[in-house]
Image 1 (cartoon, rainbow, N blue to C red):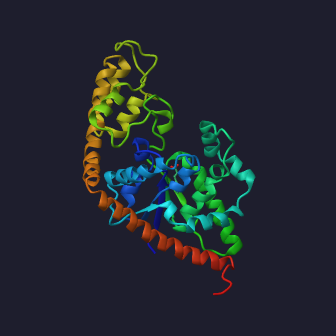
Image 2 (cartoon, helix red, strand yellow):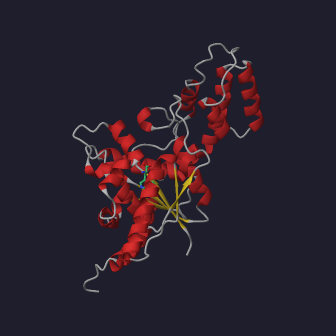
Image 3 (spheres, helix red, strand yellow):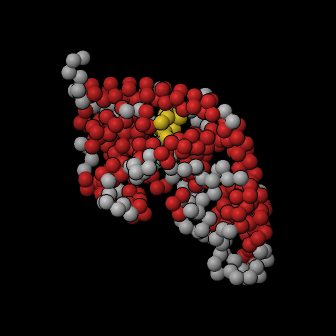
Length: 332
Ligand code: TRP
């Protein structure tokens, strides 16, 4: 059997450079080696957006456009809408018996997210337990590999625990998945925050047009200790140089800029102008492919429906095996 990839994103907004280096790049690179499923996790997104579900609707299309724009091949990759695979809900319920409250409460990513959200009526059970449903996402497709950003590692660990428990109790049906981090596991935000994140407003989006990109780059956080261009500057931990390292293919230019920056022989404006040029080059083909698909909404719809249909067949097959292993086949 060809090995599988499953990963996904919540459709709460367009995808940004952090998504690209954390996961999208690996998906594009591995799509021809692995049977690849990419989940648009609208059910998971609902766990903290249930009061305004209409927000997800448009974003299912935006995220799909981002996928196609970065080069996921729709002939090859299954793009899947989570709510259209109800088997996931069934598997989640079975998995709930295999996880303790204490384990859920220790999940560092969920803890951090709960802090950021400040839920007014207390933490919804759906949000708090989403790592269980994410384990179902991964295992229902029998994925071997899950390309994700660093913040998702606790989810993969949780999925691995559930698989071990399931297979020990009921028989070896499920596959223990492995996480795969991007070359740059976590890209800092334009404000110097450790993480690029929509809720922090520090993102560069894959679909940003040149004028917007320029504004975001020119207002980036740099070295706060440097007041004049003639002051020696810090390159390490400076997000402008982190982005140069990540997106500027001209390594000589980057080394030369770093050198001059350290000596106080270059202004921030020149460093940022060159970063803008590099990023603009990087994004140009992505924007162009996005525009091509944007002009064909029916084709995009068809890609989503096709992918979801194939994925559902895979999910149904796994659930037959799950029910049989759990002895839930009374009339078979
Ligand atoms: N939790 C992921 C995020 O917030 C999205 C997601 C849902 C996911 N299901 C998944 C990622 C399964 C990997 C595998 O970005």
